Figure 1 (cartoon, helix red, strand yellow):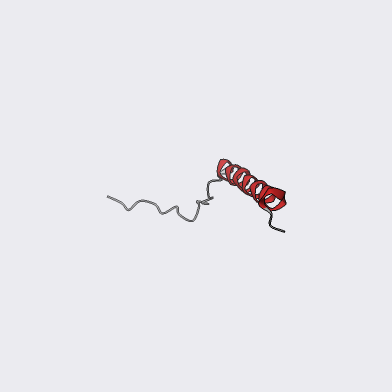
Figure 2: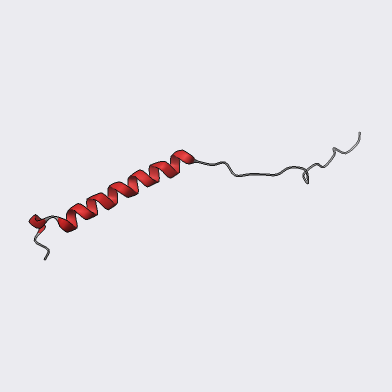
Length: 48
């Protein structure tokens, strides 16, 4: 029996891209910013 050929130098490993995760994170971030902006600029909170 011969040893298997080592072709690990030929392989280029590239990480998987998760576009859905980035898009979801962006939507959540925009919602948080919108809520913070609404709270800061709402005169009923009487913060200023």
